[in-house]
Amino acid sequence: MSTFFTPGPAALYPTVEAHYAEAFRQNIGSISHRSAAFRKIYQHADEQLRILFGLPKETAVLFTGSATEIWERAIMNTVEHESFHLVNGSFSKKFYDFSKELHKFAHAMHKPFGEGFDASEVEVPEYAELICCTANETSSGVQMKAAEIHKIKKANKDKLMMVDMVSSAPYTNLDFNLVDSAMFSVQKAFGMPAGLGVWLANEKMLEKSERMKLHEGIVGTYHSLPSLWENYKKFETPETPNVMGIYVLGKVAEDFNKVGVDAMRKETDRKAKALYDFATKSADFEIFVENPNHRSATVVVLNCKGLAGDVIKQVQAKSDMILGSGYGKMKETQIRIANFPAVNYDQVQALIATLGSL
Ligand SMILES: *Cc1c(COP(=O)(O)O)cnc(C)c1O
Image (cartoon, rainbow, N blue to C red):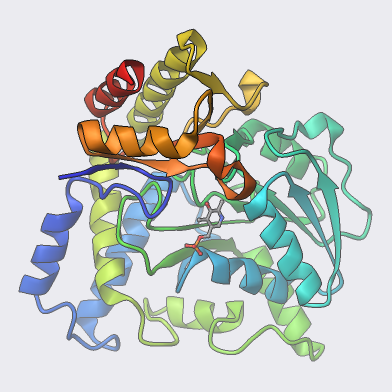
C-alpha cells in the first residue's frame, strides 16, 4: 500500500477503514437523517469534537459540504459591509476573493508567498466586522501560531474572528473562549475521505447573522447560521448530510481523544523537527519558509535542487510514498510533505531515508 504524504486528500488515519466497515454493518448509509439513530451519531461527534477542541457551550458544531463552503457561509452570515483578511498564499487569498465576490468591502494585509504574520504588525481596519486568518497556509507551508491569533482578537474584542484551520486542526491550539469561529474539512489532518466540512461557530456569530437577516440581509438559505443552528439544537441538519462521514468523524475524534490532543501535538512537533533537521543538513533540499516561527508543523515545504517532479517520481518508484507537489507556480521547484497524524514517526523516518538516498 502506498503511503500518502500529500496535504489533502491525505493518508487515511489507520482506524478509518474499520470505522467505515462498521458503519456499513450498521446500515448507516441508509438510515434516515431524521431518526434517533442519526441524532445519536451527530451527538457523539459533537461530544468528541468538544473534548478535542475544548469548546465552550456557546460554540456549536455545524456540518457543511466542505471548508470552501464555510468561507462563503461565514462571510454571508457575519459580514454586513466589511471584512479583513491576512493573505499570504492561495488559500487565504481565496477567502479574501470570496468576500469581494459577495460584494463586501474586503480589506487585506498581504505577505509574499512563504512569509507569515505576527500579531504586532497587524492593524485591523476600524470598520472590519470579521477578521479572517489562516492558521496554516497549505500552499506555502506557513503557519500562524495560536498565540498570535489570540493577540489579534484580544486587541479587537468588538470584532468577530474566524480561523481557517483546515490543514492544521487539531494541531492548532485555539482558545475558543476568544476565537469566535473556526473551520476544517476532514480529508486533511483528520485522515478521512473528503466530503464533509466542520464549522465551529459561537453565539456571537449567530446573533450577527440573525441581526443581518432581520434587516433583510441575505444570509443564505438552508446553510445560513440560523438554519444550521436551529437544526443543531436537535442534532439534525437542514439537508440530508454526509451521515457516514459524520459517524466516522465522531469515531476518529474519539480515537484522537484516546491518544490525547496534547500528545498528538507533541508527536507532530517531533516529526516536523525530524523533517526540518533533515532538510537543514541535506545538499539536495532546502527549507522554503525562512522564519522558523512561521514554519508549518503540519505541511513541510522544501525547495528541491533538482526537478521536483523527478523527486516525486523517484520517491514513489523506490518506496511507494506519494509526496505533494509544490502549489501553483512552485510545482517544478518544491515538494510539500503533509505531517498529519495518519503518518507515524517511523514512516516519516522512512521518507527521510528515501529522500536522503536519491
Ligand atoms: C484544503 C483547504 C481548504 C479547502 O478545503 P475543501 O475541503 O477543499 O473545501 C481551505 N483552506 C485551507 C487552508 C486548505 O488547506
